Every structure is written in structure tokens, then in C-alpha cells.
Image 1: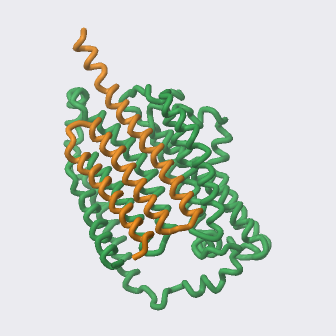
Image 2: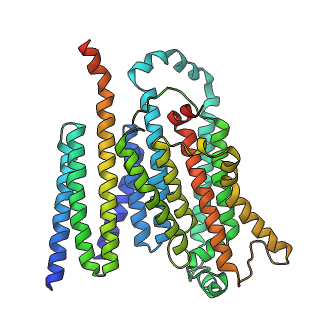
Image 3: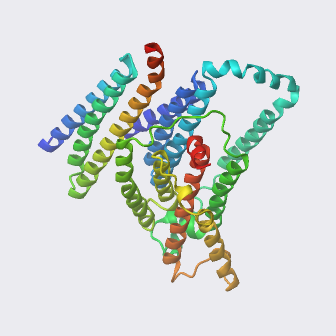
Amino acid sequence: MSIKELLTIILLVAGCFFFLAGTLGVLRFPDLFSRLHALTKADNLGLGFIAAGMALHIASPWAAVKIFAMWLLMLLASSTSCYLIARFEKEKDAPKNRKEEV
Amino acid sequence: MSIVIDTLLALLTIYLALQCLLAPRLPQTVFMFFAFGLALALAWVRLGAVDVAITEAAVASGFLGVLFLDALQDFSLSASPKRRGADKDSATQPEKQGWTSYLPGVALGVGLGLFLLIALEATWKMPEGGGLTAAAEAQLPHSGVEHPVTAVLLNFRAYDTWLELGVILLGLLAIYAVGGVKLYPRHNNVANDPVLQQIMWFFTPVLFLFGAFLLYIGKSGPGGAFQAGVLWGSIGILLHLGGKLVFSVIPRWVGQVLLTVGLSFFLFLGFFFLARGAAVFEYPPAYAGLLILIVETLAAISIATTLTAIFATLNQENKKEVN
């Protein structure tokens, strides 16, 4: 087993670990905001590790650039959707709070 | 090793399909359907059908997912406790209809049963030796493209693809005919969100470029009009979600032309060469590559416009602002 294969395996296992942690967070955390936190942060990190592992495995510069671009787009999309879901949830509760203040 | 992965994938797909049917609540069903679509796309990749996998991921998980989420919001509004009391009077009426209310269900059941029988018979009679694969690959040099799937879809069996474009357009016409069913007013103050605006302007060129890439690469690899059309259509959906209503900006006739240009140009091309003495949808081999690229581009434009129009009609908050 070469150094490259070893590194690939380490990166993939690390990625799987973060995915597992994120999934555990989604299942176990109490409310939507902390679940979103688990889903977007841990999963994106896990995806980054897996992308790095796959780039190393394919070992072609163009493929590496494409995989890196995929990860960046994924980061942008998932953080935006996380923000939008959180905002929607926050504003859904807003009228109720206002009523309590009055 | 690969047989283990394939077996796990097959089990996962069946499990997700069952969960999709058996999930107790509607949101669970929808999210199970997303997962099912992705598992199915992976299964297509494992079977070597990358074209189908891209289409499955883009249409089933992507576009249908958007429509399902939109519908889910409608259902959650109609099932909310505040509305339930108001609907109580109207909810008791359909029960008096008697046996006629079961007719659509029975008809659907009989139709699906017949379809299953036909499918079983077709599988039973599957010709040995790969069917028409050899014949298609022998004619590949005359098709104008290098990718066998594109050659079959756009050249050898162009009639099917033309009808598919018609089916999509027919779906849109049905939605137009039913009209936007505005049950409950919605408040859309998310559209002006600065983050959403930024991401919208960032993703529009990226999606356009990727769609164009898929369209062009369809000549020599997996890709083509439907995949590109869905990606371009997602630009329209993104713009609609961001409050930039595409169909209120462009004139009505431009929208109609864009909706029908793929279908009509495909038809014109098919019968133009029929008039010149060839068969229907038979292209001269010298121009076939160029003609296929033009047809695919126009078809992708039509598909993208149709998908955007479907979303724009069904997404009521935006329609309300147009009126």
C-alpha cells in the first residue's frame, strides 16, 4: 500500500466520520436551529474530506479542480439554504412573540 | 466487492421506496422520495446508464422535489389548525357522493394493473443478444454524433423524443387549464433577502454555463437536451424564488414562442426532409451533427421555459404579485 492510498483512505474515513456525526446531530438535537448547525457544518466538512480523498484517488489535475469546484458550489448552496430555512423558521414565530409583548 | 455495493444499493432503493409509501406523515414521504431519487440515480450509474442517472437526479430529485416542497407548503397551510375549523362545513360534503367517488381510483388501479401486465410481458419476451444495440452501433457513423444514447434519442428514434417534448408542453397546458388554485394568501418577504439575491446572481451564470456544457457534451458523452433544459429551468425557478419574475418581464408572445420553439422546430425539421424525399425525422448524414445540436438547443430552451412556467404557475405567492 502506497502513501497515496493510505492518505486517500484516511481522508475518506475522516469524511465518513463527519457525515456520521452530522447525521447523529440531525437525529438527536432538539430543535431546528441546532439540527441545521449539525447538518450544514459537519456534512460540509465531511464532504470536503471525501472530495479531497477522491481528488487524490483520481490524481488528475483537471478532475481535482472540478471536484474542488463542486465542493465550493455545494458549500455556497447548503449554507444559503441553511440560512434561508433558519430565517423562515425565525420569522414564522415572530408574530406570536409580538402578541405576547402586547 | 462491487457485488456487495450493488446489493446494498438495491436493498436501500427498495427500502426507500417502501418508506416512501408507508411514511406516516406527508413531509416524511416527500423527503423519502428525494432520497429514493438519489438512490435510483446511483443505481443507474452502477448500471452504466449515466444519461439516465443525470436525468433522474435532475428531474426526479431536483425539479419534482421543488414542486413537492411547494405542494407541501400548501398542504401544511390547509391542514393547519387555524384553517381546519373554517373548512369543517365544506369537508363533510364529499362523503355523500357514494360509489361514484371510487371510480377514478378503480380506473387508475385497472390501468396500472394492465400496464404492469404489459411490462411483464415485454420483459418476458426480451430478445437475446442485446436487442437492437448492434444495429444502433453499426449506424452510429451516419448519425452525426458520437454518443450512442444521443444518436438513438435525437436521430434513430427522434419521433419518441419529439413526443416527449409534446408531453411536457401538454402538462403545462393542463396546469394552465386548471389555473393557479389560490387557496390561502402567503407572505413572501424572503424574496428580498440580500443573501438570496447574492446567491441568485452568482448561480445564474454558473447554472447557464453548466447547462450549456451538458448540452454540448451530449454529442460525445452523457448529457443532452433534457439535462440541460432542467438546469436552465432551475435558473428560472431560482429567479422566481428571488422575486425576479421572468414571465412578467418578457412579453407574453416571447414566452409562448420560447415554450413551443423546440417542439415546432423539431416537427418542421422532421417534415422538411420528408418533403425532400427522406423518411420522417431522417437527417442527411452530412448535416446531421449540426442539425441535432440546433434541435437540442431549442429543445433545451423549450424545456427550461416549460419547467419555469410550471413552477411559476404553481407557486402562488409569485402569481399573486403578477396579478
